[in-house]
Image 1 (spheres, rainbow, N blue to C red):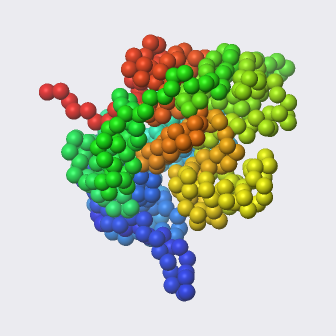
Image 2 (tube, helix red, strand yellow):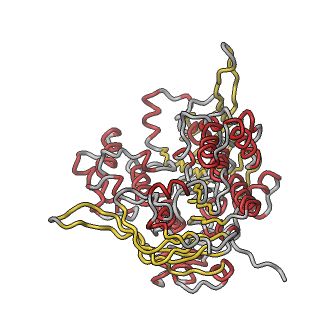
Length: 562
């Protein structure tokens, strides 16, 4: 056996209280094995202990962590290994690829320098030999023009290219085990597909094993041989991938599978894990189709020939035009959702930000309430901004960490004169917290005290303080695990039904877009290449680009035909 984790327990020291050390138990008696040349997937919601378990192998945990049990690497207990022994193994025998490559890549060193370092350190290669090997590694992971890219800095590469560089670094010393911690989360579907295929190809080529960590069962079903399902620090179920997907035994595993949005069906609500386990999701609710929208609802937002260009330096004195958005047209009706999909770099986010004049447009019109938003002066634009709000992908980056949740909600109301006094604004803030599913205790807490899903609810509540008519949601659920994602999507649909809100929903997840959207707009290279109803786009796409996007969506485990 390559790696055997036996009764692993991990506690975090939280400081003393009344002279007694307080500990938080993150992992409780986890056991599983990884054989040679196999892929084992750790799945579960955020906070289930997946990453803590994986990082325990090489002790990549903070100093306040305490590990107990056994982690046997070819018979050697790594929990008893010295730091020098672990450092000698890191990268050489066991390598890691993390979710965000920019947290692992040094921004002040070139890609070539960062690839050369482990080759010289672990393999003793000369600089010339290491440079040749590094260039070959970049070519192996599919980086175009590898010789030129050796001199590039991480920020000069796309997210998918950065992740390929991280995989190249991980494979530099040909390790026997690759730990991949959410390596495809927040990547668009085509890049995700490329990274998954690359990992599978590298696994076979180098005869290595993979510990793949994810909350996306669609991805897991395609890449894993064995699946370990975790929740609250314990293993709820494990077995071959076929068994887990075709005949899951644990209620939690069944709930994880049930709460995934579908590419073929649009239910009235998505299944939420806790409700599913408690039996509160009746079959009728889960299977009921979504209510049809009024096709003749009034148009609240009309976009005509919207364009946005960026002017970049070209040479010493010259500039060149980069056309990020080109001639986008659409209508958004009251109570409807327009889904906007496309690969990274297609212009989705730029289009959404230009609508709100967070980017100044190059041309076109945005007609709202009979007026062109792109021609309004500062005072008029400020008033209109009350009625069109935006929810970003990362709520933690858009919430002031020094403001309580109460202050976060009250501030926009005070700026825009909503409410007669502070008491009235506080009452409104409390009511909005209840509307998005947070209790009154949240009012006095800070953003860091909440989970990602809870912070996204706060961000939505902040938008609602100003009674908007349109919400632009820019990848608002892409970084959430499947259960929290289901909760937020259900909330958005409930708010739309109750308040008549209209959404511009930007996403790379086509299954999510199918659930939430009435109409879908497909973008490529700044242009709209296809536009139709959600069901029509997903059932019968007309453009090859759209078909390619759909073909890249992970479908999970599919039984092989006899």
